[in-house]
Length: 143
Image (cartoon, rainbow, N blue to C red):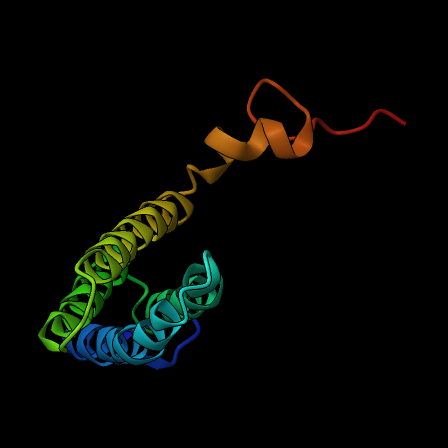
């Protein structure tokens, strides 16, 4: 099932993109994230791994065009992160908390992507961005 994009190009199948990018994200979290947690520097794992997750979620959204695919990739990544529980001497909170964060990041990104796709983004953030309280759009100027 290959879908056409708006620009006339092809998008990769949804399931393949979810598995590939979710695996890349999860493998990164399970390896680099685990090493950063072992350093015991407060905030360092989140400072490094959050931008990595945003990058992966952006790639999933770009490749598939589906907000649901972003969330599913996060679930796959959280599953990979759970593999760290099998390593000896691993603190359970150093695995469970990042796995929860991965799922919540993916949920937030998928909601944002769905709002933007449905053009509801302007309803929620338009007034804050444009300063116009009615509908988020600036009225035409009178010259």
